[in-house]
Image (cartoon, rainbow, N blue to C red; front, side, top):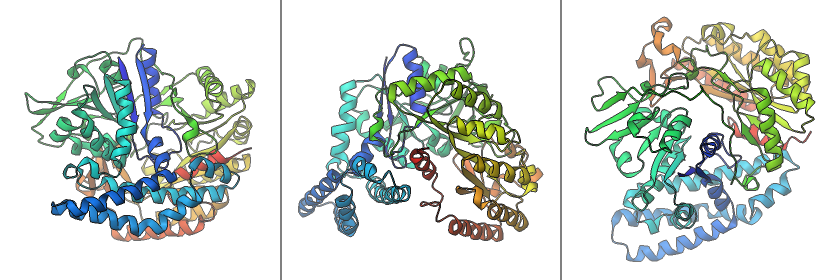
Length: 572
């Protein structure tokens, strides 16, 4: 079967290809299928970041002016006027940007020796693309003729033409944020009537949307089915033309029964369950038990990056994503989605070494980011040892848990093997909060490990969480003091507000925390906690203080792409 995977606009600012699509591609290729990857995000970003787009935009505005003279529809008159006004309002910002940076690759080459300037370029680019994208795709496009769309011609001549040329039997859209889902929905609606391919949507945005995704119009106009959670089994069966009712982790619409059908995910391979998409008394939903056994048990597949042009990403040095494990070896945190039925699986270190060697030889890339929830200390020890034994010249990065096993000897060995950027889930400086939420860490040990890691040469990126249920002013003060005391050992920081996944352990015993579901604003698969106003005010105050503290270290506050840029620019 011919399968096309599309990574849609707009995912950050085109730094690297995420891992999901290459994994699915690698799995299907190993089954003998003809697979292509279309990185629509990279194509879109390269277009919008070039001076060619400014010329296109300017020409489109002249066309809109002509249309305005003939248009009779009041809605479309206002739409055209809005675009024309928006262009001239932003022209004073747009033209100097494109005059100074006519080509993203040329600009990156000039700036790669200066990390601060490079990050400022990314900051400008992010702002620019956000303005253009949001103004272009958030209009009620079903009322707008295609010729009035700012990107209609570009989509037709690039994305759509590549689909026509390949003529796939199956198209998969990977949507990982609201912007990607919005673009995919609108684009799929444009093409669905002109092609015979089955269209499948997947990605993390599916469970973020939760039951809001169960919309008949979506299934009629945009896609044939959805995949939630891990997609290897579902895509393997889709590529074998298996019936929808026999495919785990699939959501589809049964027209004769007038019901949405949610096929249960296979338990050992699932990080999600049907609770994300169902509500009480949902009469139009059927939950379907699907039995499927992996032949020989769960299997890791090598990601396939064939067809990816790494020179088109906006990084001085390209980064390839790999995985060493699935789920989390700790698997106990009260707020985590991995705890409910997800089994931890670890790839053999020898297999990882072979994958690294293949990617270095094939793509001439020497920077690798491991997408694992956290690399186990013993795996880090074995992996770094074998990197050194094989004399591999590379740099690598990952999430790590703040475990005492990360002592001076192991951290130094990791650094010598090329480990450079560590991402740590600190969460809180309060031992009471860490214990309450079963993090299995404490503030004293956390501080010691951050110091040792920094002294070993690591760049430390720390996540802090605020607005925990039952968090007090005193707890927030302890978090504030932890960051102040360890400022010299923290290079980047991101502050997040507490969010609760629908299948997290805490949901099953909210009453133990003096809570109920009404205390959370569940929009889709994640609920934001309605913290007391006093706590909210103080946590925002602390976040502002951190922003001031780290302004010399971080250009884009609370933007995790900063750490990718940092990793790319490290040369030693």
